[in-house]
Image 1: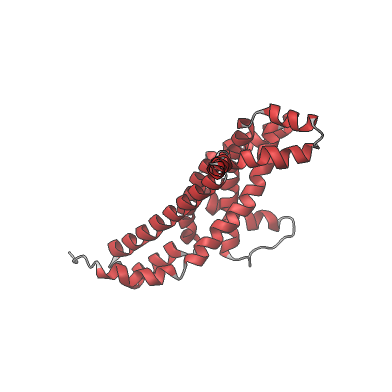
Image 2: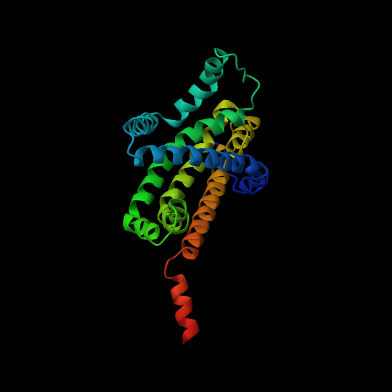
Length: 238
């Protein structure tokens, strides 16, 4: 049995770090498009229209029942065929397009629940009070409801973001080279040797990324804390 070489972890880490921008691009693109779609789904569930609510609930139910890797293969192999029937050719699209499309569909289902629960957690009387003093519906939402929704949504959004980052490692299964894909290439180049060392290096990278996401979310929660300004005001008066 081949002996364990811990120094190889330090050797391989710089090679993996070079592909962090690819992983980051997948996450950022997915969060952007998935959040936009998630807002539409949440609106469909919140509004009184029965058709929109049924469609949103059906979408969320179906997507949650499909494993990430199955949906990734369905999008990668099936979407070009589907669009080709309408005369749209996306066979030359990059693999990143299919990865972001897949995880945006998955992320939207999670975000719909996050946004809906955050919106419903805010007392509806606050909107009514804002409108009664002369604000428009948009002003009441933007200035009163939305800041509270963001604060409530941060913990669940952070969990979804961490899960997205980890599930994004499946992108290598269709040939996209991110940090996980690069790790697989390194293992292949060494004919299966140093697998443990490479996976430990990947473990360290994903662990650090998770900590950074959680720290960033914690700082955001502190900045949006409702009693922060009050504490600051009391200290100034004293």
